[in-house]
Image 1: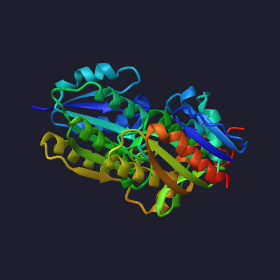
Image 2: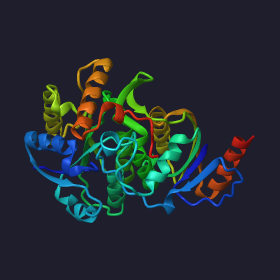
Image 3: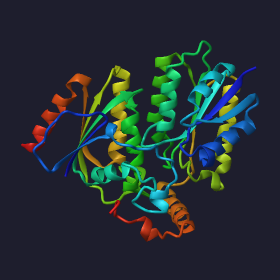
Image 4: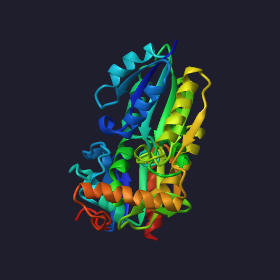
Length: 169
Length: 201
């Protein structure tokens, strides 16, 4: 399973049932309330039954992901960040040692090759912070490897198509 | 004399550990401090008060390796409301992991906000094992650091502090496993159920 998770609509047609495109901007996703329900009341399921519950199972299943997000202050902007916060049901509350640091134990989450396409008006300092953020995400989000592409908003679709073509080879 | 605006940007502000950290700060802070929760709907109201304060203290947890969206959205609103008198921004951040350094990226994000919008970043306190430390005998370590942290703000000698449980990682994992197992038990959920590999259906 492969996933393209984008914070904006992408005008891309794919003829591959193995690839799922999710446009987060078209979904209704509330903020995580930090209730820990997905760890301690209904493990593996968020207690807020909105569109996020349809998204995080795809994040878990996919072994190749492309995340497309606008960048703000060197991190993901609101739309993508809201979804990533709501994806914690795919982890357990319990802690393990991973790469020498403490991190949450994952549920049935595929090891991923991730491509992060970051767009917006991004300074060099923001790029550096974003690179550090993705490195840290790689530990907490089960990335086996990752690539970060900084792109102009106008070229995102082309960049995504190019990366998807590489998947299909 | 300065005055601190404490902004709790935890998504579960009312019942949060951040609220407890803010209360400890208020206890030790030797200048006036006023506490507010950041909610989805009160950004404008908070931004209107900011110029009354010499310092802002953001208190929040690490969320997905970064600042919580509650805070991100508040910063985005603040950006659209330039202040003529800009308070110094200090931060108390906590994460559930034992390494306080896991909070570093979130601090860098706040620092970029400050640079882009002409604010000065003041003192920073990074707390590791922040989900549980206040319920352990190590609470005094947090109290000590918050005391020093608040003094640095009052004296305007801004610094970076950090604290965590003084345990080996192995011991921390054991302690956190017990913490979460007990948490589940209070909800009638067993450790095995909490460990399920299933996600949705």
